[in-house]
Each structure stands twice: as structure tokens, then as C-alpha cells.
Amino acid sequence: NPFANAMPQLQAEDPPHEQAENLKQRGNQALKRGPKYYSDAIDLYSQALACKSDRPEQNAVILSNRAAVQLLKKNYGKVIEDCTEAIKLDPSNSKAYYRASKAANSLKKWEKAVGFCEEGLKVDADNKEMQKELATAKAGIKKQEDEVKAKRAAEAKQLLQEGAKKRFMRKAVEERGLVMGEPVYEGLARAGAEPFLDGEGLVHWPILLLYDEFDQSDFLEDVPEACCVNDILA
Image 1 (cartoon, one colour):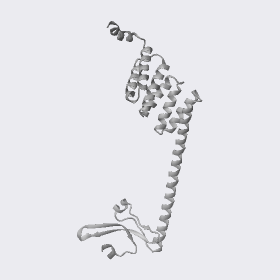
Image 2 (tube, rainbow, N blue to C red; image 1 turned 120 degrees about the vertical axis):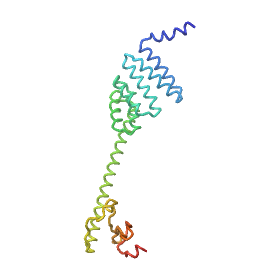
Image 3 (cartoon, rainbow, N blue to C red; image 1 turned 60 degrees about the vertical axis):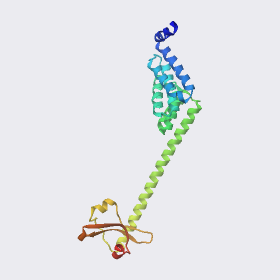
Image 4 (cartoon, helix red, strand yellow; image 1 turned 30 degrees about the horizontal axis):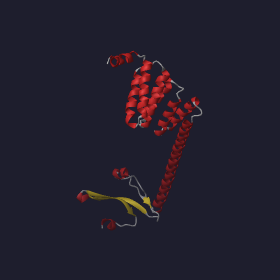
């Protein structure tokens, strides 16, 4: 078939922007055919970009379309990459801002999502979907800030409680006429073993028993002060 044989040559002679447009349309068709053809759509859009069209707006649309497929495939990082490049080529491409913001929200990169939304709304102020993404991002930021505040409050409360426990313990030791020095065995200090005061006012001690004749030892982390040695060894 002479006509069929001539087609590749005719296509090769098409200017880059026409080749890119043809591949873009084929990519759009693959996308409409459903999830099984998403990879084909991405490949066709990539081929369209490889044509190196000299029309920035056209390349921006192709990048944004490829980002749309990546968004469906939940490849959020690639969505942001393609949309960022599309915006550089055509700052008026509102779909690129929207898709980038949606991907950023999906990654919980709230500040980045806010940035895409605010810039995109300068281009398309009435874009409801982008306004929705902006609200989601701002809610995410607020939740994140609230979680940080709650964590800091909990840490401060814990420090106060630990400080109170240490003060009560110090008072209990003084009332018993005891003097506490530095740990004799560094292993106990590294283990974090410390005496503590229970709810009934009894001191609990960590105790190390050494059996020199057998070259052995026992470590008891929690021994109430009312216990005798016989109780421990029983």
C-alpha cells in the first residue's frame, strides 16, 4: 500500500508542534479509555514533549495532562514536578496550579499547597475546586499547629510532674536522714534506675546484690523500703 508506506514519511515531515498535538490527542484518548490505559497515556504525553514543540503554552498543557494521569495513579511527587514545569512555561495554566495543590495536599505538604492555590487563584479567582483545596490546606496547617501545641503542653506538664516527683523524693530522703551520693556502679545509672516515692509515701529503691564468692550479682529495680533482705532472697 503506497499510501500506508508514505504515512511515516509524511508524519516525519510535520512540524514539531503538529507532531506534539497529534500525540497529545492520542494521549487524551488513552486517558478516556480508563485505568488500564493510563500508562499508555503517560507514554504518549512523554512522546509529545519529546517532539520539542516551540510553543510553550502547548507544552504546558501536555505537562498538565500528564500530571492529571499521574494524579489518578497517586504519583503525587511526579504531579508536582510536571505542574511546576507547566507553570514555568505558562503561568496562566490554572489546571496546573489546581493539580499541583491537590497533589501537595495528598502528601500533607500544606504550605506548598497553599502557595499553589494562592497563585492559581490570581489566575482564576472563581475556581471552586482550587478554593476547596486552599481550605483543605489551611485546615491541615491549623491541625498541624494544634498538634504541635498539644505536644509541647504535654511535654511541659510531664516536666512539671517529674520535677514535683523529684522534690517529694528529696524531701522523703531528708526525712529519713539519708544522704544519697553518686552511683557506685555506672551500669545502674545507665539503666536509668532511680528510687521513687509511691502513693502511700513509701520509698522504692533499686538494689544491686553482689555475691563475691560466686562472682555473680542480682539487680532488683523496685524494692519497697519495708522489705528486708530475707524477703528479697526468699
